[in-house]
Image 1 (cartoon, rainbow, N blue to C red):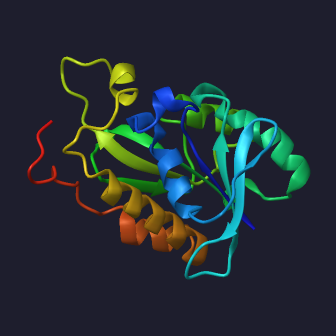
Image 2 (image 1 turned 90 degrees about the vertical axis):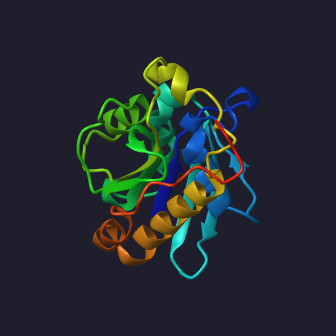
Length: 195
């Protein structure tokens, strides 16, 4: 079994914000599957299309900085090792549409990932960063990720890329997913829309 954790903030205020791209990816992956409420997360147990691999999709309901708290109850329910957990989240340092999948490493300044690594007590946790940048020069980083996507942002394609990379990680492993998706080009603004 594998676990895919999409990071974001709960509540209508944060829907469709850049910081919630992890939620959008796991919601798409869970399409047609019921979400169940646990102590501090929403979970969906399903099989991804085109694979027989069982996957537990997770949306922490603790707000971003407490994302790692979901692993306390999950540890009692599953025996999944950290290298079978994929964390999906936003990265404003990557151009919009670029992906970066890694097997492990530091949190890179992302508070949600930092919380996950702290609670799992290891940096060897696979992660998929979805590019939502760049941040405009006159905008604070935190303000930027908490704003909604611009009308010109091709959110559907970004979510599609995130889902495809996640499915590849589940079915073929980290190396295959890295080779296929880490080199993808940024997404151009949608024609007919302005920021």
